[in-house]
Length: 185
Image (tube, rainbow, N blue to C red; front, side):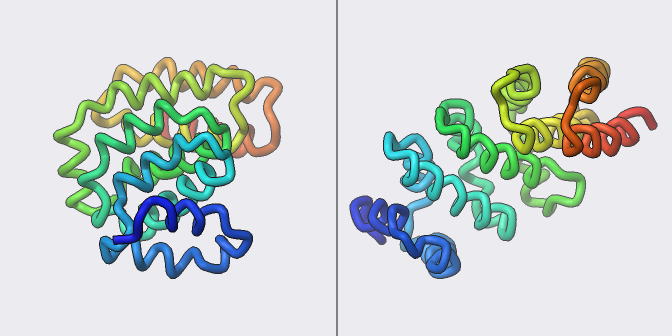
């Protein structure tokens, strides 16, 4: 298994992006400890935390069923992340895991998990004026995906999306229209 120090060096490396596929392979093979990588998303060095979250996002969006057992850690650390760049990656992960076309094993794990802390986190991100647009879009998508299981979030989500769209950027307007169509069926 790759020790923490070499992993931090890999995450700090100037050629990190070029080595991403190799790091994903090491992660999938267990040579990088997924729990340690999740913990590194809270690292004080913003580059390390950003690259750790980015690596997690790419690996989990491609192979969610291989990492679903780490859902409790993802939920916990996603809520604790302070680096705004990490918020986008975590929200993208949550959007991927909750999407209707997620693998059956992912849906089973989600069914056994209390998602209300994630719902609160997503609404916090939507409500925070300092939250970046991409984070808000992924938070809205995640909430939209969870409305089947938690119908009580539909009405406040519609209200929140309409409020965001009033003076929103083109990305918020586009995502808001798309999500409202789904929510108002």
